[in-house]
Length: 553
Image 1: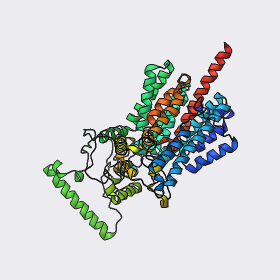
Image 2: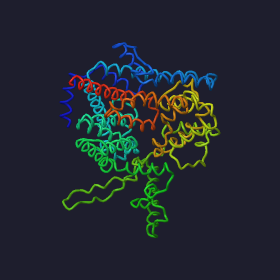
Image 3: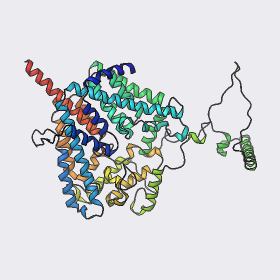
Image 4: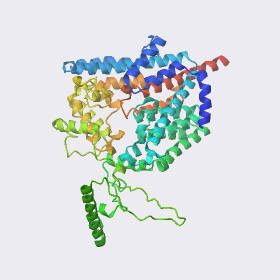
């Protein structure tokens, strides 16, 4: 497979749109200055500001343009400009929309000017480079821990283990869900292009990132395609993709199955036998509670504790660094020495009890603002809903209490957005100047409070299901019904209007509609540009096919 990919990559280099490839590699980087540099470079290489936006037959979706006056309307209605340090947040939010519009225009321009096969080969090159970076991440981890499977490696206080996917960042160096979504795009795209090798490659890279939520969303799309409209070859690839998911969960990362079950039951606050951690039966006698021991075992436990105390006294007296008892060697029948298995109860094989620096920041923040945090500041908070659904309920309740925000929202960065989290100065979703920090009271007592409640706890609570971040929530809360309608009519509607021209684009559209629940993806300036590239390409391919058919007739 690797040899075939190498040969294909050499063939690609002759027919790749290097401007498009370079732009994708730079713009998808997690660092905002690199994204801006990518835009400056591409506009220097091909300067063009002819957007050709109109309400009838617009060249581009009008959404990015319309969302800006809606934001200004919300600014005037809510009078947020009177708040100290708010205006930098507002213009930062506007700048993200402008950057998204400029990037989409350039992608559309490159699709228009290049041949469809050239764009297709550029996309292949991009996903191959992304796979190389992802595999390099994995190899680095393997060499670091000296274990072939980091997904089952419990050492180093379980830094990797089921968290290994968080370190497979690919070419974007971004969070794991970004790579998972990009590879999901690749699976769908190459499935329709009947490129089995690339489909399997993208699916394998998706498995490396191992994002449960994104993977399940992709499987739903693939099952829908399998059931309603797919060829025999496509059905075969879909079956293999689903089998890869099963094999990875069972063989490569079996603990992830337990984790997924725990997240589901913890999110729903349901007690279950798989959720409650059973009392280990293979613990040492000294680590078992007395009520589980027999009379003789309790005597042995007392004796062992006594010996440990004596050894500790010897170490303190003579300055020994450690005391290693002489244990009798055990031999196999052929004379080989039996090497005992590692002690799974050793401290370094368990999650460290020391909270991470990010969690410490959140805990300190909660302690300093308890009076304004009804959820995280209270020890009595209980909810039967996952954090994401609870966040949606918060938004609806707040709109009911403050109906003036239903039309144009409560303002950029005032309730639910990436810039709102960044402006806290806590290092959430990126850095922000400390002397310009700003937290709107509505954000503090709702989504930020809910986020603090879950993400100040241990890692088991740090799941997408508990993160209130969502594009739909952001648009409704900060841009009101006008923002939400602009998105559905002038963004999704722009592509749905051309549904007859879409093949893989239609599945990508449905997949994106689900993905937008998981985070503030417009502000991430990452996956949306790849989605738009694939949709613009699909539309051009269909138009080219129609033109060829009409000329032939």
